[in-house]
Image 1 (cartoon, rainbow over the protein chains, first blue to last red):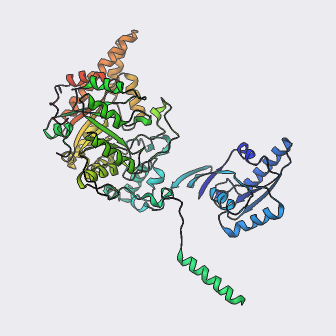
Image 2: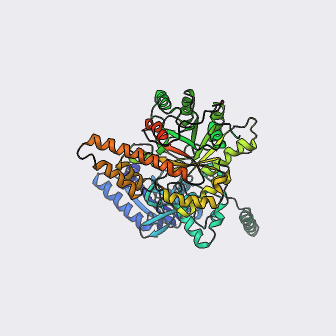
Image 3: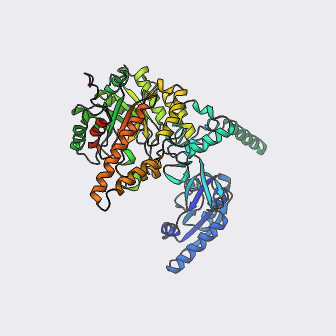
Amino acid sequence: MIVAERKPLEEIRGFIEGFERVLVVGCGGCATVCLAGGEAEVKIVGSALRIAARKEGRRQEVLEDCVTRQCEPEFVEQILARVKEEGVTALLSLACGVGVNFLAERLGDIPVFPGLNTKFFGATEELGVWVEMCAGCGNCMLHLTGGICPVARCSKSLLNGPCGGSTDGKCEISPDVDCGWALIVERMKRLGTLDELAEITPARDWSSSPHGGPRRVVREDLRELAAEAEEKSVAASR
Amino acid sequence: MKSGSNLERVLEAGHFAVTAEIGPPMDCNGEVVLEKARLLKGCADAFNITDCQTAVVRMSSIASAVLVMREGLEPVMQMTCRDRNRIAIQADILGAAALGISNCLCIAGDHQSFGAAGRLKGHPGAKNVYDVDSIQLVSILKGLRDDGRQQGGDEVEMRPPLFIGAVWTPLGDPIDFRPFRLAKKVEAGTDFIQTQGIYDMELFRQQMKIVREMGLHERVAILAGIIVPKNLGMLRYMNSSVAGVTVPEELMGRMAAARKAAGEDKAQARRNQEEEGIRITVELIEQARETEGVRGVHVQAIEWEQKVPEIVERAGLMPRPAPSPAA
């Protein structure tokens, strides 16, 4: 999932201070799973903002909503409709950065503010602990490294083994951070594939990563299906 | 000869090589570099110029290398992967070669969060690069030199004559993987290796045995890294905080005894420890020299460079072979 963490309330309050009618929107996807921006968190943030406004004597109405996912057109429609109908003057999104962007492109002159700091692609290690496991670099090499990612889990994204900074399985940046390459070596030993690491991984092409510029994925098969469906419905309506 | 560098020539001729380290200053005072160069002249075959070591901004390796050349020393320019992408790395390598630099040591570089292990502010908020790793960097330099090709495939008309080096942490974790990591560096085209500082010669010899069994010592010139210990505190710090370095109890005991022998006299305690440190260094050099497959030493006297000539002298490694005419 995309792991996010709520921004400090103080910072959020600063964003929305001058707006009369603010809609706090949660997301039922990753932000809910990582307990940062789902229905429950929308209620908490909404209440906190209302209390703050009352305390400071500001006239501010705080509305709440939560959609299935803030990153798909069909689910954000209801938000856009509500903004129009209820005269919302600003949005606070408790989705990841994708949700904020997606809304921003559709909201015309209404501002949307981020309620979360989007952290990384990760997994739940235990309750309250999330760990980064994928860097979204666009060209997966996990088949070469026993399923453990050196791009995401080595602090230097080294591709040919551990640097000299690995100590007792920990990274030189902190004793709290596992050395990604120590994990890879251990894993490949268990799999009996350690000798595969003898192969030199050449300098890689990073153009599939964010370094190649903003990315998009286009699936022509799906686009054709959509076009066909559209044609059929037009034909049927004649 | 691949590069014609003095270091290459010394190794080629079968001499036991000596390199030392010069750390550039944190300002633009070239006189500091020149002064260190004058102190060290003649006591080693080439001199490593560190590249913002411990992730602290210092005078650039390339500029400092040119400064030491003015004093007649041959530099080993260090190049980290932390601060430059492959475009900048290759541009700097071509520039360095044009300026007459002929040895380059390829290293990943300490992470920017390191900041001299907290002793300086550094730039922990910096964005790092690591476009390529140290092994890929070796391959890139080899490609420029031997194939006349940039990493991207474009042709290099005048090829940079480089003696290509890399580092090896023989006692780093995971320790059984370390010889394989060395093998990859050799496979990538490293001409010489400088190791992380070694105090535990017994463990190092075990690793060297594996290296010999793999035949790596015949394909690459391995220079054992020796870090000169100044006092007990430094040994303790190296043992606890520097990755890949373990200090045997026996050495720490010797240093502690040297300090204790001075009683309450602090100045004497310092002198005793410094003398013991130099004795330990000389012994380590001798032990490294007796280790089959080790073809030289890399002596690092951190901010204590003036002691290197005495150390090399006492280790019986003076005078150094006369520099080649090109150097």
